[in-house]
Length: 293
Ligand SMILES: NC(=O)c1ccc[n+]([C@@H]2O[C@H](COP(=O)([O-])OP(=O)(O)OC[C@H]3O[C@@H](n4cnc5c(N)ncnc54)[C@H](OP(=O)(O)O)[C@@H]3O)[C@@H](O)[C@H]2O)c1
Image (cartoon, rainbow, N blue to C red; front, side, top):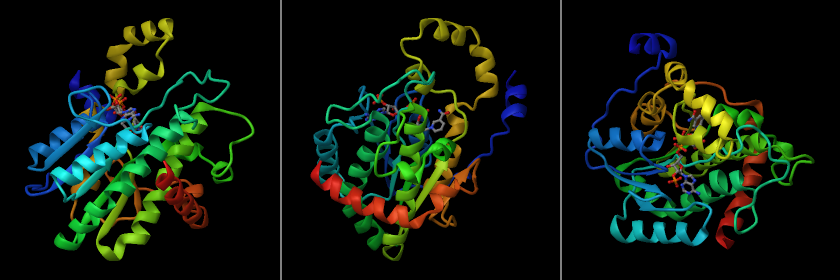
């Protein structure tokens, strides 16, 4: 059936690049996930890759816990120092059935998708910026890659600085990803002259643990999904196929930064993602906020 899968998904491939001598961080690299495959392939291409998860097997990092993020960044600075590529891949999309009436909050009181996907990721990025900029100065280039989603199109700039009138977990997921696209543009604008390039991408619809976690607690739906597993695997990308656009953004030397990608090519992001005034305000407010976390 693999020929049918390949015909159905038509996944493009990133061209392998020699990554020897390059230091990379991939967040959210649980086995069977997009991050896990991204890290495995980057190691195959010669990179020195540090991976993170909350669940063990890699370096511990919980993006919802400011102290955990600080500990990881301090450990990285002490043991490595340079950083060629930061792949901000870790993320959650809970409540796939859209049943939450109210936001679920992190221990420090933020909506959980926003806290994990955006705020934690931005705290990490700010703490790792010195290593990225040092590397860019020494080698002429460093990169930040944001694994977002086409669902960033559900995000609204009108809801960026205050909670929307009605809660939807899908919109909250989209909002966190829209904010990451804005942050990608700001990183590119602020640090392009220093040699930093920033990218955002949609990996495709990929068979990973994200759906299992998103359906946690719905036994009937989970059982139906298990029964339909072979069909799901036929039409969804494998993690290895889904990792290709991330790999391209992390390695392709000719790729201009400041753009949004899907299926290994640049595509337009949502109209909301083009509002640079919102991006600028979000950048300033986020800088102040992550400094206080
Ligand atoms: N799969 C898709 O179809 C799809 C589509 C569009 C976008 N994406 C995006 O692709 C990225 C990777 O997703 P995936 O599909 O590979 O999902 P996944 O299998 O659930 O992997 C997500 C990773 O994020 C980590 N993570 C979750 N919460 C975290 C936290 N609080 N702190 C630190 N790490 C945390 C998880 O590790 P632990 O739980 O062990 O910490 C795991 O390694 C996500 O940003 C997702 O939004 C996926």
